[in-house]
Image 1: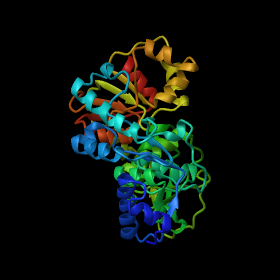
Image 2: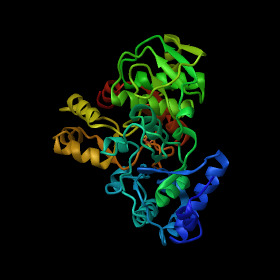
Image 3: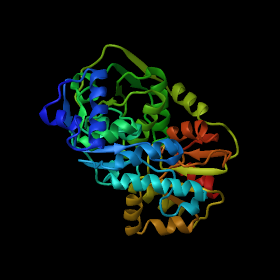
Image 4: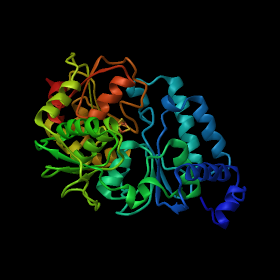
Length: 390
Ligand code: F3S
């Protein structure tokens, strides 16, 4: 990969150690993936924020970068391991909280916004079609590439931080149009009715096509919420970081020759796989983080009821503040629901705390099982609310 004069100077230490180290990472990545040059990016989203994932080694890495490092572009964080204000309400231990606070302080020192969300596009960071960005979290990456038409690879924590400090990323992979074209047609037989159906569809397609880029036919319409849930599931169970949906997503693509069908039986099998048939003792929605429309829907359905088991809504703090302005938070909190801001059921230390989680997200099922040792049950938002309140 060619570096220009300024980039070479940064590599040689002109802007300090953190910038030199970051340039080294970007240069190595560019060489590995055959990039010809670095390109400017307009925003970065950094994953690997929870102390649960970072541990002491990660914290030390951040502190070293923060000695003389500063981000050059708008940079946000993925969810942390706890609500950064009301962590006691979540039952988080003091030791964990203190470590998590240190992690956040290091990110702040680097000049990063403590947005702590996997849905930056719901809090005003919505890159335009064709814009180059460097985002990390798989559901945010697939949404940005597919629904917004922005261009990003799925960055790891260190490569996202390096891109933020330099303000550039190597131009390879999904930054190039030739790598964003559909590789397989997917014909969907039944139209999904809600976000849980979209999530089950993401599971079915992901399992069938693995990491190929799909061009999906047969979906008549989809809300932003349904697409965020679908993409999160597809990226989790398949591996692609972009999809095309005929008549719905904005990117142009060539039409591939190969095809697969997703039948009603495939969707029934997905629900079967994502349903452990255990008694539910925890309900959690907001994976990816909840939108205002979802909060509106919950407020309407839950007003005047009260929850009989823990019910968490995972959400960006900024989205919750907006919901509060709209008068939506009070009826939900009065029903006994907990807003878990800045975090989620997958990245907070919940291992073995509950036996079986009901959720409307297939991605949450994956992490509920894998990370937290829960049994899981996938159901619609409406059924999640019924499960918590009846
Ligand atoms: Fe977001 Fe956590 Fe789900 S990071 S996509 S809410 S697993």
